[in-house]
Image (cartoon, rainbow, N blue to C red; front, side, top):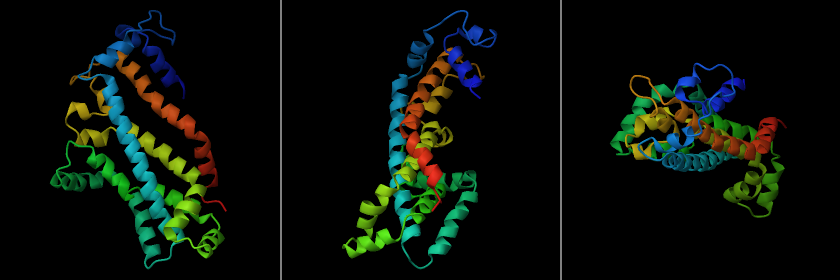
Length: 256
């Protein structure tokens, strides 16, 4: 499992003509300039693409966590007409292929004038459009004792105050799990930015890595692998920072 990653790390220090011809992980000829070439060889410095991906990932994480938490709280703790039917319909969207929605969504965003902006990549995350994360949080919230809500109401808390003061602090593991998955999906997303973004100064990291390859499939392999390693660092750091909450959230979700 680790060999492809180790091979990529090794290839970042090899000349292009040695990457696919030299066997073994230890380079016979070291080339440290792949990092500087990869950083500066594209139309814009690679730092711009890192900033663009970071901005999108941060907004996506905040929007997904907040909107999914509010929707999950309604399904898990509130009683309203049609709750079970709406919840079943929401779960049904998990079986709907995303490609089916591609053309209708593109038409809607085109009518709104949002093409070549970050809005199609950000706004849906603030509208609780991912049923998986809502279901994850619902299962976590259902495991919390209902007596907490009753005690809070006796003390004068309203619905929103119960959510922010009682439920939300207890759901930090579920929120962290959602944040980690959302960050990784947003950071690695290639297809959506490819569809909605046309200006190169708006490109994210996956689109920038694709620029190392020309139309004939030829590539600057060394610089591309070097920037691939750089692009992995934020994901690894984010995962390490939230690993404790991720494992706690997976271990306790749905268990009473």
